[in-house]
Structures are given as structure tokens and as C-alpha cells.
Length: 302
Image 1: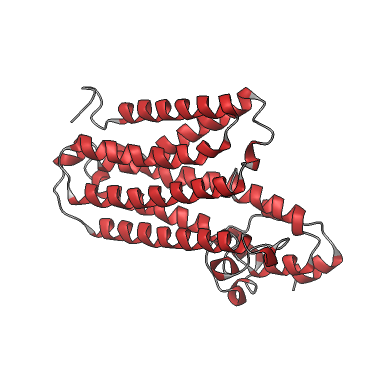
Image 2: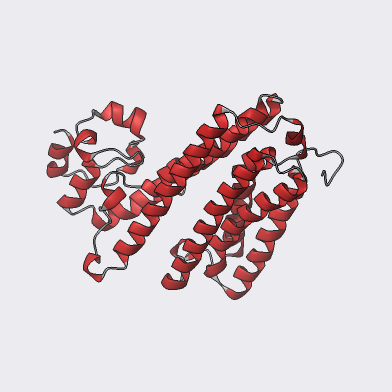
């Protein structure tokens, strides 16, 4: 079913619902200086968009069921985990310099609305009324996408749980998480997240075969990667970690032998050349904020 006659993808209704949800949560957060609804607002918005578009499609094709179930599992897991974490932590340090500045605080919520809408594009396209005209048959790209999504979700779930458990152990206070998946990647949860949305794009590829405009769904994983790799994801976390642990030789060794994103054996990664690490492993210079000491230079050039 098309909500608006001129919008055969139901993008407008998704945009309006997203803006409405984020605006409502923003008013609550700004009024009560309440951090506990921020991540919940983002994760639950993905769920609402997926379910809304699925119901509006009124056809329930295999591809639509698959992507809706996958996003549902991802959204419930992420929303539940982040909500529990913020309840336990109490406050979100990301907003320490924004709570009293309404414009800065509003900017975050505007960006979150854009994040939800853009990253949800593959789901909107798959569940759109237009997609119902495409044969209800799963193709190779669908199976590849479903597999990528599932693997990414598993990696992200395990990584988040491992780090949460690590931080809740008093014996690990003042140390960085370097166990489990975190011994093979400095940000395995982000790696899983990226796989999830490349998987969603792959599922939407069969739809795009019938309408070239729908290849714009590739914006979803690219937008997500740009945020995680260059904006508020890895660069921010690497800077904070370097400031906190950069004086420790053990931490410097950990950074040298551990991939920033891809899951790679430390033995293999530390033997790769700098150019290979930058080009294929996302080891960008911006991720290194450790003061250049003689010790570090010797290890880095080893």
C-alpha cells in the first residue's frame, strides 16, 4: 500500500515517522537532561521503520520477511543492550558538553534521524510497494546478504558482550579490553555492524536490478562506514584510548599487533607492511595519537 500516491517507495512516511520519533525523544531528553533514551530512540526507530514498511507492503514476500526478521533481531538486540548499558552506567559521556547547549544537543538528534533514515534505505526499498512487482524468489545475492547480515550480527553481539563483561570485572580496571574478539580487532563490534548493513544492501540488490535508481541503497553501508571510520566512531575512541593508555608500552604493542577493524590474527597483522595496513586494513594515520617516543618508533619500524 502506498501512503502517498506520488511515493511508490513509502520514503516520505518513513521520513515523517523518523522525524516524529526523534523529535519526541529529543524533547524528553532536553527537558529532563535524560541520557537514557538516546540510544533507545535510535535502535527502536530502525525497528519501527522495518515493521511499518513490512506491514504496508501487504505482500510478505520471502525477501521482505527475511530482511524484516533480520533487522528486527538486530534492532532488539542493540536497543536492549544499549538501554541496559546506559541504565548501569547512568550517564552518557558523549553529552557532557551538550546537555546545557540546546543547539549542540539538537544537532545530535538531527544527525541521529539522518542516520536512521539513510541506513534504513535497503529495508525501505525491499519492503516498498514497488518491490511487490518483483518475483518472490530468493537469488544468490539474497543468500549472500542474509549470510553477511547474520555473521555481522553474531560478531557484533559477541564483541559487545565480551567488552561489557570485561569492563564489569573490577580486576580489569584501568586496562583496555584485549580478550576474545578484541584480541584480533580493536573494534570488532564496528566490523560486525558494517557487515550487517552490507548484507542488507546485498539483499536489496535484486530489487535494484529492476530499477537502477534503487542502487542508491549502497549509500546505507557507505554512510555507516564513513561515520565509523572517519567521524564519531573509531577516530574518537582511538583518541580517548591513546590519551588514557598511550604511555603504557603494553598498549603500544597491542595497537601495533591488533587490526583496527578487520578480524585478523595478531601474528599475521603485526607482520604486514604499513602501506598494506592502510590500504586494506583501515589503519589510518589519524588513529595514532600516541606521543612519538624512541621506544614506540623502534617497535613501529620493527
